[in-house]
Image 1: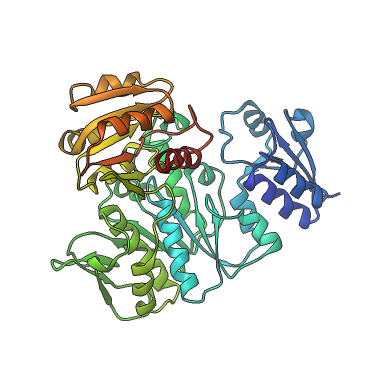
Image 2: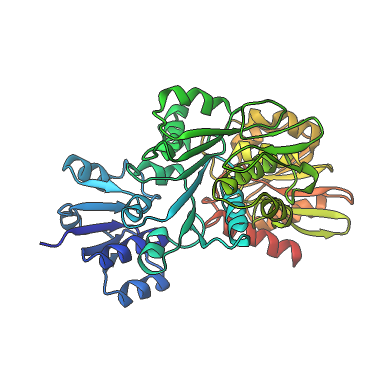
Length: 446
């Protein structure tokens, strides 16, 4: 009898998983409680995959040999809870894809910097002639690529939601950039639960693999003794200290001591991406690329030519002397902390969205030092207004992107920066942080 796979969620991840399961000769049902986009319906029909939308065939799904769950579905969803009670194994698309690929997997997680670091590593590898492809939270579904367009190397961005249902997936090079409060509403508002999810990136690793992380991250340090890490550990820091795979000396020169090549260096001033957070991203990428066998001169060249990803400190325009920056991907407080840290002009800051249990005290001093005005943009801005009123010269309450941009035009003067770095998820007013960022850019440019 064929194995029956139920795939929950009809987005990029779910459709890719369904395609791979079908190719492996399994019976497949893809089920989505909402609406499946037309392009995904077409992909399913082309591959002869059964699908349903607008609700689940619960009893049929609960006869599945295995369930592949979209990362957006919480573990507390009633169907998932019942499946667990019945002993049905639940995995992520990434876990499922890993069973059918022997490609090198370079995987990146962290509360902040994932997309930039993933894109940067991919850029370095491709520029060096490596057959590398993006997957996970960025690029095409890993499962779909494994099924239909395999590559020698995958550079995979992993969220904590994806890691929740990964068990045996082998990450050849695992990178953990940082762990700061995020998505705590999904983890019973317990930081230790969220941190444990991030550390799952090391599951399945062997002594032949590498685990790269920021040595000065306090949460990561606290989790290390609680985690059975079999891979060799390589660390990076932003100061001059021995024993690390990457560090910066007193002359602002990066040193890389990893892989099978002699130690090599690169001036910080030659990095394409500014800011301390991007220094960390660049060091992690340099270590990973070195382990992949890319020559130091190629890594230096690529680190100096990389273009910032969309929605991450993206310079939109300079209009009437005001610089407009789209940092819509800043969906947590720590990400906005780094964004504000890179500001060199008085700033009008746009905050707001779906609060995930944020503690705004982390950015309070930076706001006092650098922010001339705050424009709140969300369905309910009461928490922001309560915290930041009297901490900035002016604070404005708006409930749409149009009103927020209009307020910024009124408040900003030549020589100032308008920064969209919301600290919050986008789902109260927008379909995604990309939607939020693109609407912002459209309104700014006109």
